[in-house]
Length: 287
Image (cartoon, rainbow, N blue to C red; front, side, top):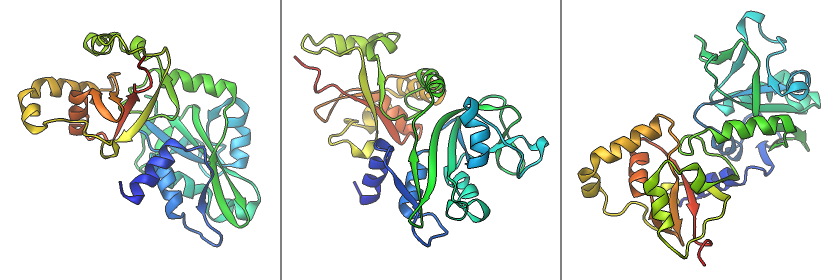
């Protein structure tokens, strides 16, 4: 892996760290800050940068994201951006820069619901309040702007759990997600049978899912490749259609760094342009 790839992976898996967005004297976001913000992108999610005044009056009160109309017309609704860099720059520059105001700003992520729409100005908008999904606090310290994900109100945690439980693992990378692997994918008989056939393998009720780029695996996930893919093209295309359609397809299974189950899913995902694969490592589940 290149240094940039290692940084991206580290940021993705350890996002609770404090990151310097804008170093001392910088009006622009640092390379580390941009890498951090980009790592938060997820299909189906959008972001809003919020001043502390707006955040305190809305999200902190009831967990709902909505504009306080300070800088926009009522008819515009609440604006969001698919790009967290864009949302961050909206509140960390000029009049709302924490280094000027002495108050924090906030980056809030929401799930893009059916009622939201893309306006002619390029922003995603909603006329209704939207539940917050993830929240990052941004604040000034010694002349720099820092960012860190903050803990949730219990009400937000329950909403987040409901959203996460219904999401495709392939389209929605999540940090620290624990799942009931066999229970969740019991509707995939071949997948369950593959894992059940080994008498020494005992998979616990809750297992950790990680998301890794394909090139990060220590061993090849896809064996033989093009010839095999051509012979089983219809089957692979069927899986690709499920992944692209948001179906809850099982993750890749690895054992001691080697592929154990999921070659067809890996081929299908790569054809679909998926960059991060959901992975469960079973190497510690043998007795």
